[in-house]
Length: 181
Image 1: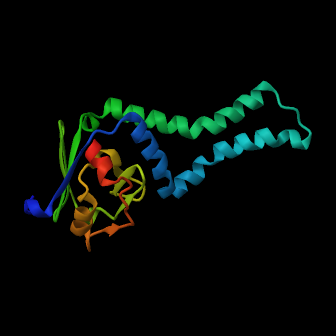
Image 2: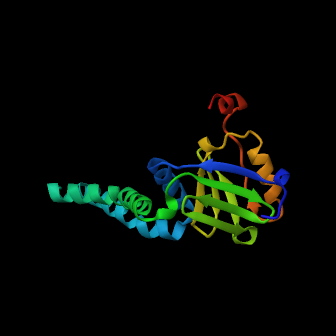
Image 3: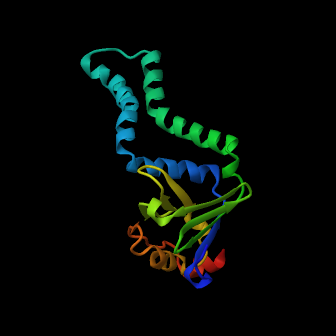
């Protein structure tokens, strides 16, 4: 980390299971091919529920299969997040993210990692998360609730300028809300 402290922003985050679950669902929109493949299950469930319009009578088996089709994607995502949190020691505990001219530095109880800006194609914000992409559909997610510095986004935008695609990022909390935390 060769940058000076004035050109560095940081945040400490410890995402909960539900935050990671919601973030994983939000990331599906960036993985549209994967989403197309997974959409087969809810479409099959919808087809089963629409068969009475063709004169077919539904039994408990068809209704159950339709239910499974609708819940398949949320269940698989929840299982994936749970298994990752349970088995991967790198995800435990609060993680500290530092951003400077070199890139993103992540530290935690079992982790010390630097990702250079050239490996970060884009940064996106939603109302709940800051996504730092490291691939097409892979991203580090930082909950917005963890960002307490009102100047964090301006600092990050200045640091990332010209190095990565920094999409529109609006902080959705007022300074008084930040101060209340």
